[in-house]
Image 1 (cartoon, rainbow, N blue to C red):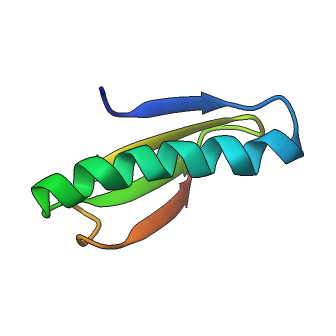
Image 2: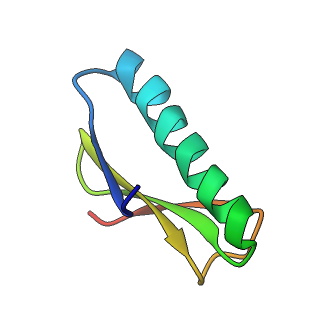
Length: 67
């Protein structure tokens, strides 16, 4: 799997489930390396990225708004 993952949602209901799925995938990779946290960045009303980040401590997930 390549990071960052880009998540584009159609509505509020799908936003939670799609972001949860992307974060779950990122957690699996973060656990393997045990040196990255997860950064979820909101790029717009319907677009997000989920990435592994050395700036986020291992075991944590942070949210950021880029707009």
